[in-house]
Length: 153
Picture 1 (cartoon, rainbow, N blue to C red):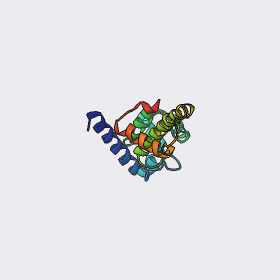
Picture 2 (picture 1 turned 45 degrees about the horizontal axis):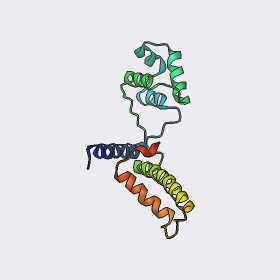
Picture 3 (picture 1 turned 60 degrees about the horizontal axis):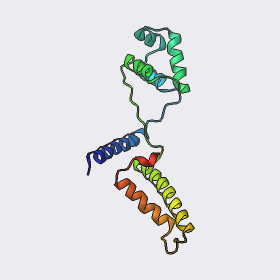
């Protein structure tokens, strides 16, 4: 296995592990800032004092988090001020990350097979070919096995 392929495998394993953990970490209704404040018993004025900002800044941060517009930097500072730490990850919507790679490889393979079949049909050479689905699966597997990354283009 090449170094590049080994690194990709390690990254896939890490993402899949994070995805597993993320299933139990749905964002609370009021957001993480408000939930953490509640859990440790810290009110907005106390948090504002620790951060040396106004209460209104804290309330705005809570609203921004709920709206999805807070920056990671700001969220990290707030977490630290409350004795916590920010954890974030990008994980697949569903299933393991390998399924995303396979789906894209299949898309690329399907385009190649369809283009090739069109040319062969024009030259009347399409007689006796395997099914498109079989050819797509075989080519997609080859693309992945070779570690090609050009299928995202």
